[in-house]
Image (cartoon, rainbow, N blue to C red):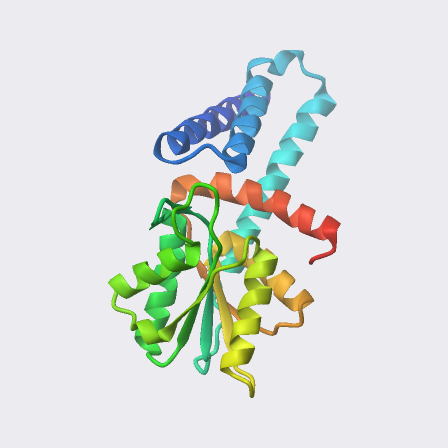
Length: 243
């Protein structure tokens, strides 16, 4: 059993470190990547120093890792179950970063999810929400609009929300736009990455928004980074009282 656990720590730690390096080579270093490196280093050290570790410390690391795996798997599973009615009037696509004026891979997946729904429900309005960050030459909303238009979405079915800098503001400002467009009320659904659905939906409920959701899967290599970062964000939102 001890050999199995030692092998697990070595293999899991090495895999996470390699994953972190891979992500750094194809994208920017961020907090999620640092979390992957940190967890990988801890697990690798536990494997290398296995015989010298106290038994209780091995148990703590093992149980902590198992809890993280279950929680991150739960986030993806929850977000992977789409809950949007066919009668939905509007989709709200939440921004998640732009490089210059080009949408990131994760954001493109959110937009592809919205476009697929639009193809099946041509009358739906798409609200693209996101302001402009320090490394962005246009607002996230403008970059998303361009992407959707290039994919065949009619411009008059796209509305930009260009002020939001957080998930909370995405929902608040988009809701204000929808109230102007639909003074008698409308059915809406938020569109975001599957790992982000849980937090976004809880914030929406806190705001009194009974919206459905569509979750876009992440690339396999981004799952550890995104989900670990998201767990920290959920804790932070809970601490602030926004969920």
